[in-house]
Image 1 (tube, one colour):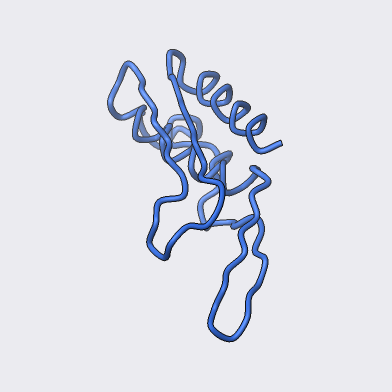
Image 2: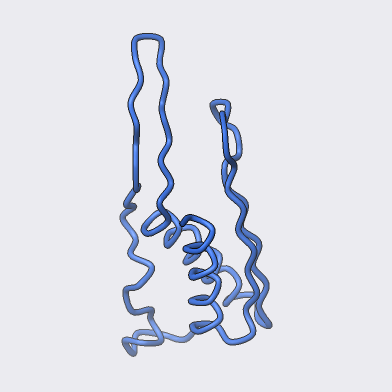
Length: 102
């Protein structure tokens, strides 16, 4: 399910930023504190689009990819699911609301 949803995100990037290419990999198994759990590589014909598309990809991953993690402490543990950030990747951008250029 997670791989299929990450492929969906790559397709969304290509729809929003024509010519965008995206690769996403998420680690499976134990991750040390401060360890890297996800890698997202994005390329676009224009640099500004690449930055926007990269941010879109990570925020969208947090929003829809079914990834659960088990946080373990000295005094217990807890399963944690979808992490919603403060930025909605599906909200209109400045170019879509008339507030600026891309």
